[in-house]
Length: 225
Image: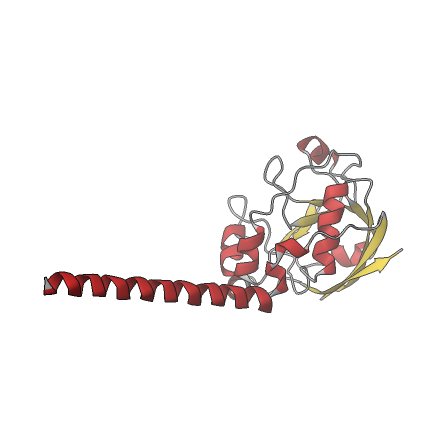
């Protein structure tokens, strides 16, 4: 009987300990969300104006993107909210392919990448073509847009039939975009450049160790027209 009573007491203590640990982890998670507003996906839902511009300060100079909501309403809204909340500040241009495109949108913080990985955006109909200077969200299939975007270096209208819907265009600084560091090339399996899955999982540590020469965004600002 004593052994039975002791077992119940031990079990109850274990349950109390597990509950306490769970509450501690919840507190840590809550604190993390408070400390880093980029993890608060529910706050990224403001309605953008019909037209607005975004100024990018980079390690190579500045450029400006003009966004047209009517071209791709969902893409424009997602981009507006990411910019407004500073999501792209400090982000690197991780995929720079001369005569094709330049892409960015992998955050230095792995936790931020993990949260946004599943924030999939329904595709917009393709109204405008992926001509030189057009800006679109990257995607890996239907309705898979999240946070990565790219600028077309040339006429890539062949992307139109694959569902890449431009939401904006570069109106200043195309020469700056053309000067971004491109020597690493494409990532696996096409090349030995940035392995996106690893970059998302390790963030700044991976970039600094493996691809230290990548140019990056210093600051992004909304410019209402």
